[in-house]
Length: 467
Ligand SMILES: [Zn+2]
Ligand SMILES: [Zn+2]
Image (cartoon, rainbow, N blue to C red; front, side, top):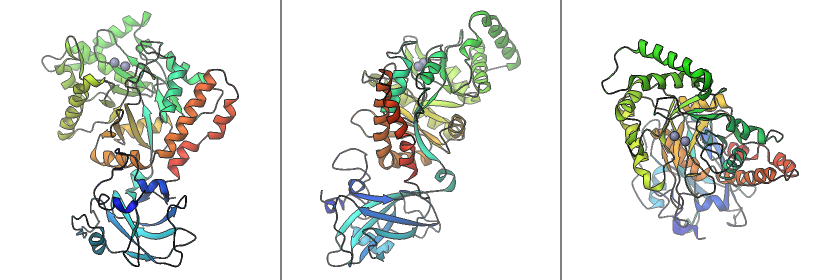
């Protein structure tokens, strides 16, 4: 591959033009660049190492390195980079450091300013100043730098409700597509999520399998996911508990006072009850698919949806839900609604979920998921990070670039993470997922292989961060 042909694209396009998708830059395949994520506004040491004899370093020659902050942001606002296609002219403005190769690597120190992607141009000093490559790193403020991006799906079904495969199969399939955590959330059923956990209990696997359920409270059309809760909320209103449920809802209704015209008071009170009980269980209460189109129109009714946004009893919004390709209007409406509510000053934590009803039917599964920036993969940290706004919803349809939805800051970094940070991680997850499926087939000896891979996926991301 001739890197020089990319030099006219690199200043403005972060896409891999050859592969026509938003996977990593071609240079990342042929060089090892470490670290890729650095704390902003302090000195970082970057090492660029050519791999596979892709580039022959002349150890006696001098090279030049220049850094272009993609958004031209600096603490002092003192960057005046011309909008240009000419790398030479750009580097004249930002300035270059002259470096000499050390032990077959290009090494330099730099203070990357503010929170943004930064392009590193590396070129030969002599002659035509041939470009060696353009690389990128991302500089983060402290709060985001202390978190790793994890992929997860918080809403999906097994054949214990109306899905296709058994709980353990679904969990293994989640690993196969690169997820770090998941919860099975069958309709009205909590135990399938426990089954998924227990199937792999003898193995110390890295996929975090959490408990969950989709809660369908009586006489309430709002679908709510209990993600990670330590007990079932569905069980609080079934069987002999149904009378208690009715009484508790009536109590809530009495305490509500006047509510807007057109909002069904019972349904709203029931939503409060469900979200409250999910929180008591230590779970995350997710307001599911508010623009789900059924024969009666959108479900739930618009006035109830309005009031739920206004009072926000939920912990997170399914801003991207598991809709089929002919239903994209529903996600489009949810995204528009999210932005409108945010413009009113509301903080709305978001998740993206597949709501998949099968892992191998080429629909939904893997199309939609969440990235959570979290200090650890513990349930508590993941839930708190979502509540604090450190998450995005991702939409990745076959053959298309990934899109991310959420706050601008999280989306900006998520797009970089998707393109640059998950390459090794996803490969390892795929191997592990396949081994987990083998284990379910009865191949006991794969346990040792799974143990051998322990920690590798998350380490593959961790090692890209400055230490
Ligand atoms: Zn649903
Ligand atoms: Zn569902």
